Image 1: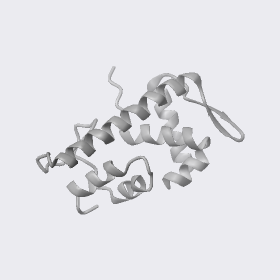
Image 2: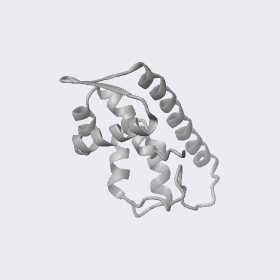
Image 3: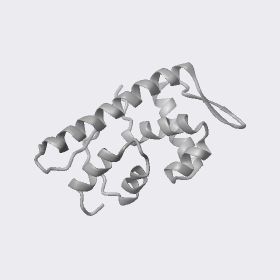
Length: 135
């Protein structure tokens, strides 16, 4: 069975872990907390593992979640470094980049603006803006 998971959802999960709550993460990401909670619940269902223990004060990362999110943070950093390396070397054919999807890239300026507020993704946002000036 193929498990299709959006890169943005993985980023959202790392922010939830950093903030320790859906409310704090939703404020940082500028999305509604219930939408974020549903998105993370869907991720957990797709993975077949609980990433976060919910409690009245927020969330705690489970042992499985800690292992998974450690790897995801590394992967996101590697992706960021790879994109930065391409830009620094002046390579690339100027064509839109689509990661993890066979659909056309998203042209949603709100998503790019949201990502731009996260200090962990500046190179990725710069890459998107370069190849999609309309954003």
